Image (cartoon, rainbow, N blue to C red; front, side, top):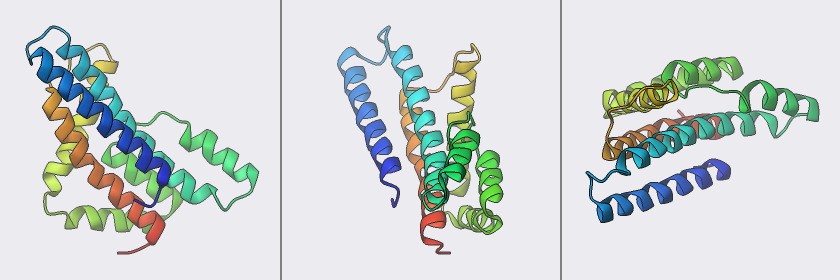
Length: 167
């Protein structure tokens, strides 16, 4: 991971998910607080993916720009609310650089477990949206951890594309 801010947030999320895992093990998976811990994990995991995707793009594009351009990127992209789903990621990449979007799509298509990874990203977003809009997501804590782990592959691809330009 080239972006140190994204790496820190990912490490922090993994640490929190590991702590929650130990709490759930200690209390038992049918304990009353487990659904609340799972909902927290949904928000934390999906929020981490969103933060990383936007931070990697924003940092890469803003670091070499004037204060005015950095301010514009921060106000219109970095600090905006956006589900980190495949379409939004693709649109954002395309807005910054058409070639980034093309390489992103190519890298996604090359993934060995492409469908699983994309399904995980979708499931993580769906769970967050369900909870955010008053619903009760049905994903288990283990599901959320797996979705997060799979979704990190998308973040790694974005980081590679915008920082290395490698195909």
